[in-house]
Image 1 (cartoon, one colour):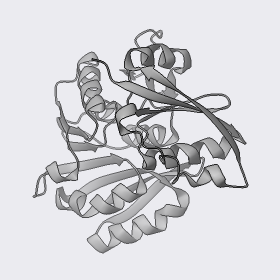
Image 2: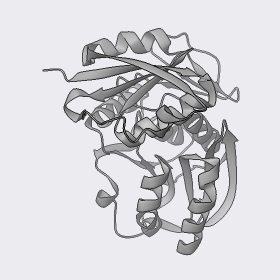
Image 3: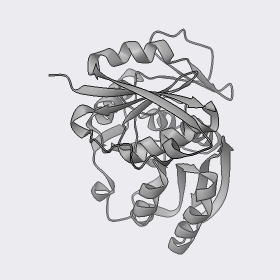
Length: 278
């Protein structure tokens, strides 16, 4: 039986940065997937995970700086693809990498990734994913062992393999993301990516990875940073995103205590994607 989802249609004024803040806070509250619209965002959560007070922790809803209205409806999982196709547009990163759906036309670029995300996060549209794709394009991945933590659609792992990585683990806590990542890995002809269900507790206890990618959120990054450090090889690289500019000092402090050195960062719409070296 397909899962039933609740779809929240949010109208946000002003749309930016309100929509970005709302998506982040809804993610903390347990919403799984989002589609940005011209007036706000569609947010999805499994009916079985919904609670009556689900929005109580979403602070922006009571902020005087924004006007946010919403409606809800039940939506079957099988309706998702039509909703996504209606809103999803191809994403081109710096003229080098194209992230598109199977129904979009191909373009002549060095790297092309075909993604069909179902209910998964990570099509390249969000600033954090876009910046992480930029990091992957700008750095060396030849013969690297890579962890993509919180892989979503596995778009980052797929590009890392296309850039030369030879052994990759893509991990997510959501069964939909794992299934979808497996489909996308096969769709893009990737042979070196292993997809698994789990959180930081499934990671190895010894240095295993040359590079770790983690595009999640601030709280999870802080909670799991010691685990990332434990399984990162000496001189290994750590790429973090999913947090705001004002969160960077706290993440830098956490990394510094573990011996991880801040190298540089990218910034879009107050979101950050930072690089650290072990």
